[in-house]
Amino acid sequence: MILSDERILEEIDKGTIKIEPYDRESLGSNSYDVHLGKWLATYTDAVLDAKKHNTIEYFEIPEDGFVLEPQHFYLGVTDEYTETHAHVPFLEGKSSTGRLGIDIHATAGKGDVGFCGNWTLEISCKQPVRIYKGMPIGQLIYFPVEGDVQVKYNNKTNAKYSGQPNKPIESMMWKNSF
Image (cartoon, rainbow, N blue to C red; front, side, top):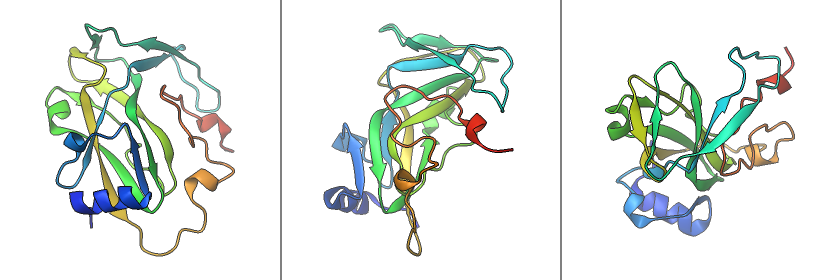
C-alpha cells in the first residue's frame, strides 16, 4: 500500500514525514516530487575499490546547466531535506527524467524508517543531456511499515548515511567488514 496525497499531508502534520523546502505544488496523487540540488560530484580515481575510501570532487551546476555524458558516473543530491519516522520512503525517477535517458539511482532507491537527510543520487545517462539545478528529478513514495521498528536508521550506531548534507556523499562501503 502506498500513501495517498491526503495521507502524506496527514503525516506531515503529525511530523512523521518532513520535507524542506516543502511546496504543495510538488505533491502528486501519491508521491512528492524532489528536485536536483546545486551540487554534483565525481570520483577522483578512474578505478574504484570497494575496500578503500574513494574520494570525490564537488562542483556546482552552473546557471546555464551542465551536460551529463554517457560512460560517466555522477553523484547528485536532492534539494529537499527529508525525514521519515514511520514509513519506508522510496525514491524513483520521474517519467520525464527517464524519457531524457537519465537514471537517478543504480540500486539505492529505498530509504529506511528514520532516514533523515538529503538524498544522494547515483546519476547516469544514455546520451548527452543538459540538466539544471532545481529541475524535478525524482519522486518520493511512502509505504507503511507492518510491525514495530526496534531501531530507526537515525538511531543506529552504524548508520553510514544518516544526516546527509545538501552535497552528494560518496560510497561508504569501505566501512563494512568483508
